[in-house]
Every structure is written in structure tokens, then in C-alpha cells.
Length: 373
View 1 (cartoon, helix red, strand yellow):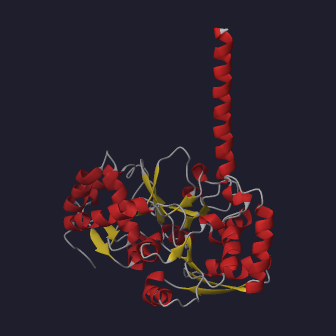
View 2 (tube, helix red, strand yellow):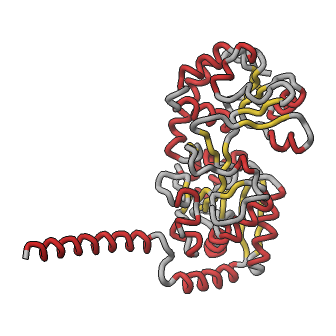
View 3 (spheres, one colour):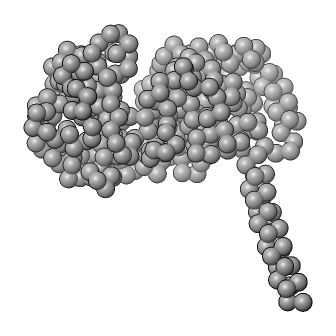
């Protein structure tokens, strides 16, 4: 009798576990009526007939949003305005406060979208707008999760991964084995021979923040790097690229487009060093304004953008790494830009890190005796 009771308890426990597991699986999938929802949304979007997007400069993004998307949905015309959101903030925020309904979607860096539009309540949630099963399937995404920049995980979708290289080096002056770890930067041979992007730039400060939080490096390393090595700073990334390509500075830290310089035949290479690495979201995270005039067209666009077709097109055009893991990457994305599932990364675009990074910057700048050109 006791054995029968024991078996019954085990069965109930097992069934309970299965119910929980199944409940989690169902929660991660699209609702049962998603097809009806999608068809209704698509019909309403076609009646709206247009979509207004503000996004990053670049021919690739403009082609993706203004040309490729309308090929799939020809009844939705896209009006795309490229530019830096930081230069559009005042006007866009004034329009939102006045209830002017002109812009639907914002595509841009998380620092601007989080620190202005999201913090001031000018965005509407978009997670609930995602209905396609392939978008909601956790197994489609890196580490089994569609990333959102905001802490609530519902306002700003992230689909691009930009691993920050530790440095861009001149291959004539820095040989294999000269730079294996960050501590190699402290070698006397590199004193006065390192340049860095100014810390007013997000990429530079984010990279330094990840070094700061590493147990094996931390504040001690940064104090030595900027206190002993006579690092030269510049806000001009083109100038930094020229410096490293010409050999004026064998090593450059921060946001330099090293791969592009290498494609031009210049003797440069980006290097990734050991340990925790910073990963940015680029200028592609997607959000939706609270007063979007074309909500159905926006919903269609967001689902398409995060779908396999949308992300395949994104990768093909930009050569950047999508956070979708169920699409082809070999021969399309630079292997150095792909995330290694065995490696540890810190996604600096997440809201949980933004406040900490902002608090960190004054400390970082206090270390630097401005040697800026």
C-alpha cells in the first residue's frame, strides 16, 4: 500500500513537471489564433498603405527597409529617413508631446532610444505585436532568447550582434604573439604608441567598461594603461584609421572600421583578446513610437524584420551578424563577428548596463590626462 502511494506521488510530481514544461513551451510559442491575427493585421496594413521609419544612415539599411520589404508587401510603401536619431530628438519629442502622428518606427542606438524616448514614455510595447511562430520560437535566437534592450523586455528589439574588437593593429609593426592579452598593452615597447577613440564615443567607453568589470583586469589595469602608456586620443575615427594604417600608432583602441580598411588593402587587422568581450547592438534596434500613425503596417514590418527572411536579407546586405541562429552565416558574415556560444559576452546595449556605464565614464575620464589631437 505504501509503495502504491509512493508511486502515485511520483506520477503526480512527474505530471506536474510536464505541465510546467509544456506551459513554458506554449508560452514561448505563437498564440493558437496567430494566423487569423496576422491576416487581419495584413489587411489593415494594406489599407494604411504606408509606413514611416527613421533609421541609420547607410545604403544597406535603406535598401533593406525601402526596397526589399515592399517586395514582399507591395501594398505598403515605406518612407525612410536616414540620419542620426541624436540630431532628431528635439523635433521628434516635440511632435510626440503635441500628439503629432507622423513617424512610426525608430531604428537606432539603444543609448539614445533608452535615454530619451523610452524613459519619457514615448514608446509603445512591441513584444505583444510579434505573432509569427518563427519569431517567437526561442530556439531561433542566440542563447534561446529574443533580446530586448529595455529592462521590461518589450520596447526595443535587438537583432544585431557587434562584438567589439580589442584593438586595430598595424600588421607591419605588431606581429603575431606581440598582443595576446590585454596586459600586453602595458609593455614598455608600446608606450607612446597607442591611440584611442575619445571616451565621448559609446564604443570606446563601452569597451573600457567591460575591462573595468573584469576580475582579472578591472580598475587597476585601466589606471596603468592610461597612467603609464601615454595614450593619444582623437574623436575622429577617420584620423584614427589613418594613424594605424600609416603606422603612426601601431595600436588603436575604440571604434575604428578595421575590416573596411583591410578590404582596401591596408596593413591592418582587428584583434580580439581573451576573456569577457563587449557586444554592441549597432544602430539597428527597433522601437515603435506611442503615437504611430500606421500601427498595422508597423506590426507587419516588425514581424518581417525579425523573421528568417528579414534577417537573411539583413545579413546578406550588411554582412553583419544576426542574433538569429537558424539562418546561413558561412560565407556571408565575417567569422570574427559571429558569437561563440562557449565564450562570455557582455551586451552593452542592454538597459541594465547603461546606468552603470554612465556612472563609470567620469571615473574613466578622471584617469586621462588629455592628450587629444
